[in-house]
Length: 401
Ligand SMILES: *Cc1c(COP(=O)(O)O)cnc(C)c1O
Image 1 (cartoon, rainbow, N blue to C red):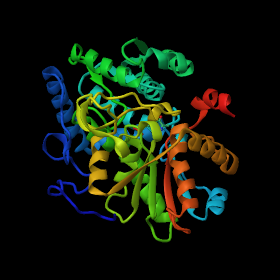
Image 2 (tube, protein in one colour; image 1 turned 120 degrees about the vertical axis):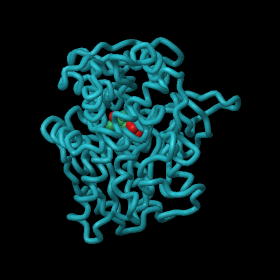
Image 3 (cartoon, rainbow, N blue to C red; image 1 turned 45 degrees about the horizontal axis):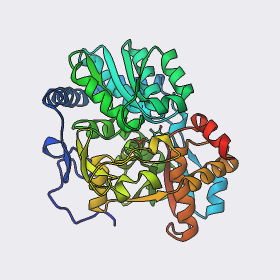
Image 4 (spheres, protein in one colour; image 1 turned 90 degrees about the vertical axis):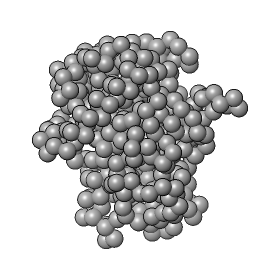
């Protein structure tokens, strides 16, 4: 499974996890399936991003914001007691320690800076549990932009604290009453709203999903996780590179950012999905939210509702680059159950003094299962991205424990 064949097409310009091919293609996935006005808006975002990303000045401004506002670099923490119990050497990349408590802020600060550069005065975003909405509201306040956040009515009921945080930060939270009243519908509604507002608003997507250039752009803004971790592993590990790199996958942004730092190494890449939201492990080819990728579907090809205890993994699809990495065999996608994730969260809390987000607990649950079942050979070094902190999940956990 290392370094991989069977390529169905030539390696793209930047190698694995470099730039996508023409029209935002990752293998047979990706693209820009959107109404004409949005195709034009995406083209403008693409052009602005390419230009900005090539400029040391833009990268410098973003790096400074990430340092002085978001708290980067985040530490690499050896999980000593848990490692000893599991017989592997586990290192945690601590995105839970960023401002607002998850990796979402990395992407949002990048897109907010881009929006300012494009002369936009407002950010539009979708949110499920509210983490991306809070990050967007935060970046908007910091840079003097307005924020409009679309959120399913059911999620608004379930995530009262994050709804209040967004409003406290000055954002407008718009309830979405369509469909299942959760993330999938909030995303559709946000895109629809953008159609009428492309002149003054930037659509700030929260993961490596949606029409080109979002999957690529969001991965580039999250690449900071993988690049920092690569340097930290080089300093910390005798071999310089871990044997395994593990991250949870909802849409796939924290995993993509992490994997990007190790794509050119022999490290084995593992994406961990929720059993009920396993787009990469069990999805079929389809188109949703402007992008061709793998989605959970019923017999008629209708995209179905995902179910996970972790709201951030409650998405029925996966970003197009993950679908491609899966096809290439460069990354492996596995699933864990709600119960395994809750067990892993408790175990991390009690062995390392860290309460993880339930999303991140999925990645850990796989490490625990794989170390016990021989999938992770004894003595392996494992880098795991801890995508967020668990404060937002206490009411869920309280009902279970
Ligand atoms: C949103 C979220 C995720 C899932 O999103 P990805 O794009 O797959 O990274 C994972 N963990 C946390 C803490 C989140 O807030």
